[in-house]
Amino acid sequence: MANQLTEMLKGTLEGIVLAILAEQPAYGYEITTRLRDEGFAEIAEGTIYALLVRIEQRGIVDVAKVPSEKGPPRKVYTLNTQGEAQLAEFWQTWRLLSDRIEHLRQRG
Amino acid sequence: MANQLTEMLKGTLEGIVLAILAEQPAYGYEITTRLRDEGFAEIAEGTIYALLVRIEQRGIVDVAKVPSEKGPPRKVYTLNTQGEAQLAEFWQTWRLLSDRIEHLRQRG
DNA sequence: TACCGGTACTTAGTGTTACTTTGTAGCGGT
DNA sequence: ACCGCTACAAAGTAACACTAAGTACCGGTA
Image 1 (cartoon, rainbow over the protein chains, first blue to last red):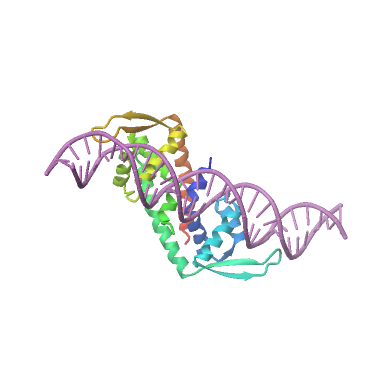
Image 2 (cartoon, rainbow over the protein chains, first blue to last red; image 1 turned 90 degrees about the horizontal axis):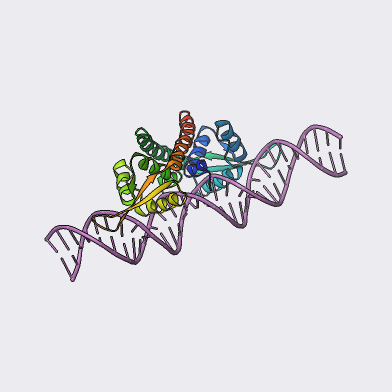
């Protein structure tokens, strides 16, 4: 039986990561730590990497390899123009769903 | 490539249906029409039936067969005690995710 | 020197879920 | 006799978050 939050994150996690990248470019490991600071402590590391591969292949982020002082080189992801459009669409869809659900909640 | 809303509905649609059943017991076909009235026009009929089978098997709803004036007998679903607990948990998880995302949005 | 912990990324496999499509079946109206 | 609406069922597909395991590099310590 799956976790409830896990299922809810489907479709929203990508938007969350895009929002984080919109603030500032970041690499995978950094994103997971930023998410923890943001309160999303339960998100697995492997999930983020898989998501980053997906959005890279869809061409909504630009990637640069940057050497690290400790460990393997970092892959720094930056939101490009398409990514910004995608993020805008995410907020729109989120608002739509969120409004409807809140509307539903005020009568339970 | 999937619709963005489709992915977002994963994990939330079940809660939405539970919320509708909490207002008043209903059968599958009725739920789909109520959803349309609620603004969820894009949700497919087959999706609801599959979902109802799932929550019935998990034992969070009670089922009663009621003859219909037109068409095959209706399966009327009622939220039981476990279902109410499940719904409460849904709202809790929703609030958690929703708050975090809104927090993230106020800085983009 | 050998080991350990922290950093950083990769990949293969699993479970859940919403959608699509197709089918069955009864009823009323023309 | 046919069509449209009501009502449910089931098989197959796509997408995505998670798990688990692995690779690799570095600094510190015993």
